Length: 175
View 1: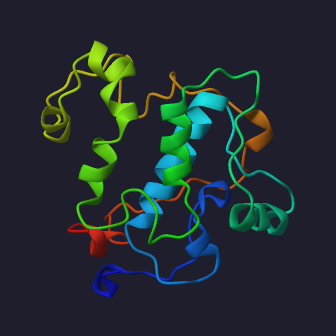
View 2: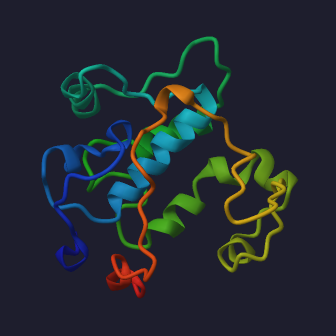
């Protein structure tokens, strides 16, 4: 692991935390590949693979359990293999966490079939943001929230954060 590119901060959405984050171990790009595995699982199944309340029980599942696809979901062996390899507990064995990690992930058999071939996915065009999105929401202004669902039970009575000079986040302009 390249310790020059590591962090040890406990930060993130609880369901998406990689084992090394929960254990406060050094974290590199392997954390991002873990999160991709969680995201793919959630997109296919409809929920994250490790869920429980309180968070302590969920963290135990992340550290111990393997992801299980519901039997009623028809998923390919290639997809199961991809998710299992992205959700490998040992970061040194995790798909994508090694040298040329993104190349390893892109070469996984799951990306060579399915919609990627149908649509002719061009990884270079995608990284250069030249691929037209399949859906582009209609937005009338920068403050237009019409494409989002409302959750009245989550309304907060606090006034919105105001920073007219933009000084609070000036430090991260080049981040």
